[in-house]
Image (cartoon, rainbow, N blue to C red):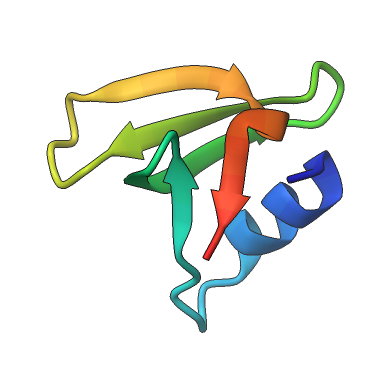
Length: 60
């Protein structure tokens, strides 16, 4: 995934778009456009967050 698409998914509050990190479902919580990074919540636990390169995220 590229930064532009990650930002589109993050800002789209009207749709639920499936995003995965290494096969695990995640929620995008923030996108750092300058550095190409995203903070994601893995699964349903709000405390399980990771900051990763957006290239590691997969849509669908």
